[in-house]
Length: 193
Image 1 (cartoon, rainbow, N blue to C red):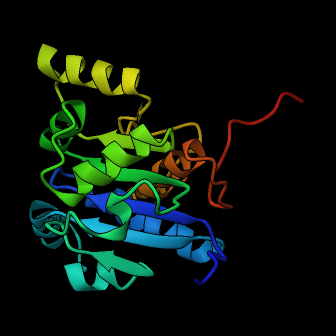
Image 2: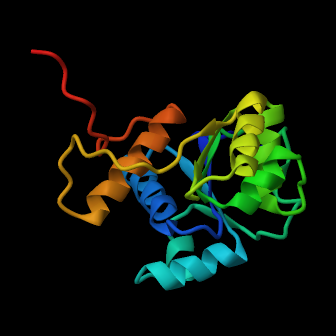
């Protein structure tokens, strides 16, 4: 059996607005060179990629080391015995959040997230919805109790971004930081003199 040489990270892109966050995370992980990336894109995520970016879903898939079908709930990442460092869902739709909250497991994104939670691995959800109603808040509370980290992609302005790309890169870098992955693109709050 082949040994894992690089830690594996799962990146999932669901159908909420903000596909750029998942794309930036893949780019940052590729630039770091230290991780094997596993990608799952939902059908709605593929549509969002086409609507919001100049990339095709195939071009985004090419950024990952391994691609998995959204419907393949028997993929390696659906098993707790398959070692992964953690998982980032960027963006995370309300439907995906709801599925994780009730351990639905009817698609690979939700199943892999459920596996991360049961194995006590890090799971970061860039929940992309606003405004919030009580149902959203309760779902976020549920997954937080289960061990997930909910990180709405709120822009950081202390870095004085000049472009949307800079904002998206900072958000993706911060999400990876929550997974315990430090990338050089992350701009931290300035230290005291």
